[in-house]
Amino acid sequence: MLNFYGWSLCPHCRNTIAWLKEHNIPFNYLEIEEQPQAVINKVIEVNGGDDWVVPTLEYNGKWRPGQSFDAGSLEHDLKDWGLL
Image 1 (spheres, rainbow, N blue to C red):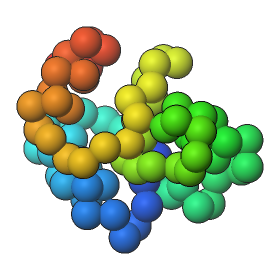
Image 2: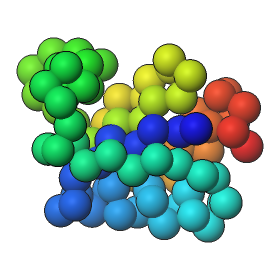
Image 3: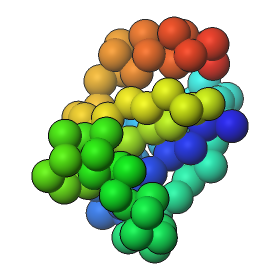
Image 4: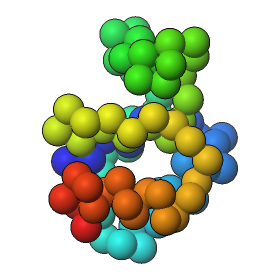
Protein backbone atom coordinates (compact mmCIF):
# COMPACT_ATOMS: atom_id res chain seq x y z
CA MET A 1 0.00 0.00 0.00
CA LEU A 2 1.06 3.57 -0.64
CA ASN A 3 2.42 5.30 2.46
CA PHE A 4 1.67 9.00 2.65
CA TYR A 5 3.79 11.04 5.05
CA GLY A 6 2.00 14.31 5.64
CA TRP A 7 1.31 17.13 8.04
CA SER A 8 -2.20 18.21 9.00
CA LEU A 9 -1.51 21.90 8.23
CA CYS A 10 -0.01 21.28 4.77
CA PRO A 11 -2.18 22.50 1.86
CA HIS A 12 -0.20 20.38 -0.63
CA CYS A 13 -0.96 17.33 1.51
CA ARG A 14 -4.68 18.12 1.49
CA ASN A 15 -4.66 18.53 -2.29
CA THR A 16 -2.74 15.29 -2.76
CA ILE A 17 -5.12 13.40 -0.45
CA ALA A 18 -8.12 14.72 -2.38
CA TRP A 19 -6.53 13.63 -5.67
CA LEU A 20 -5.72 10.14 -4.36
CA LYS A 21 -9.28 9.70 -3.09
CA GLU A 22 -10.73 11.00 -6.38
CA HIS A 23 -8.68 8.37 -8.23
CA ASN A 24 -9.54 5.59 -5.75
CA ILE A 25 -5.93 4.98 -4.78
CA PRO A 26 -5.75 3.50 -1.29
CA PHE A 27 -3.10 4.93 0.99
CA ASN A 28 -1.91 4.83 4.56
CA TYR A 29 -1.77 8.38 5.97
CA LEU A 30 1.04 8.89 8.47
CA GLU A 31 1.27 12.20 10.35
CA ILE A 32 4.98 13.03 10.10
CA GLU A 33 5.30 14.56 13.56
CA GLU A 34 3.90 11.39 15.18
CA GLN A 35 6.37 9.00 13.55
CA PRO A 36 9.36 7.36 15.25
CA GLN A 37 12.62 9.25 14.81
CA ALA A 38 13.98 6.58 12.45
CA VAL A 39 11.06 7.17 10.07
CA ILE A 40 11.45 10.95 10.30
CA ASN A 41 15.16 10.54 9.54
CA LYS A 42 14.35 8.50 6.42
CA VAL A 43 11.88 11.16 5.22
CA ILE A 44 14.56 13.81 5.82
CA GLU A 45 17.09 11.70 3.88
CA VAL A 46 14.87 11.27 0.81
CA ASN A 47 14.21 15.03 0.86
CA GLY A 48 17.86 16.05 0.64
CA GLY A 49 18.97 15.66 4.24
CA ASP A 50 18.10 19.05 5.75
CA ASP A 51 14.51 18.67 7.01
CA TRP A 52 11.36 16.70 6.35
CA VAL A 53 9.22 17.89 3.47
CA VAL A 54 5.66 16.74 2.86
CA PRO A 55 3.83 15.20 1.19
CA THR A 56 6.42 12.45 0.88
CA LEU A 57 5.19 9.18 -0.62
CA GLU A 58 6.62 5.66 -0.38
CA TYR A 59 5.54 2.53 -2.22
CA ASN A 60 7.41 -0.78 -2.11
CA GLY A 61 10.68 0.92 -1.20
CA LYS A 62 10.37 3.64 -3.87
CA TRP A 63 10.21 7.19 -2.56
CA ARG A 64 8.72 10.41 -3.95
CA PRO A 65 10.17 13.42 -2.13
CA GLY A 66 7.84 16.10 -0.85
CA GLN A 67 6.84 18.77 -3.32
CA SER A 68 4.12 21.23 -4.21
CA PHE A 69 0.96 19.60 -5.50
CA ASP A 70 1.04 19.02 -9.25
CA ALA A 71 -1.57 16.60 -10.56
CA GLY A 72 0.36 15.78 -13.72
CA SER A 73 3.58 15.01 -11.90
CA LEU A 74 1.77 12.93 -9.27
CA GLU A 75 -0.09 10.96 -11.94
CA HIS A 76 3.16 10.32 -13.83
CA ASP A 77 4.95 9.04 -10.72
CA LEU A 78 2.07 6.81 -9.63
CA LYS A 79 1.85 5.33 -13.14
CA ASP A 80 5.57 4.54 -12.93
CA TRP A 81 4.87 2.70 -9.68
CA GLY A 82 1.98 0.75 -11.25
CA LEU A 83 -0.66 2.38 -9.07
CA LEU A 84 -2.62 3.83 -12.01
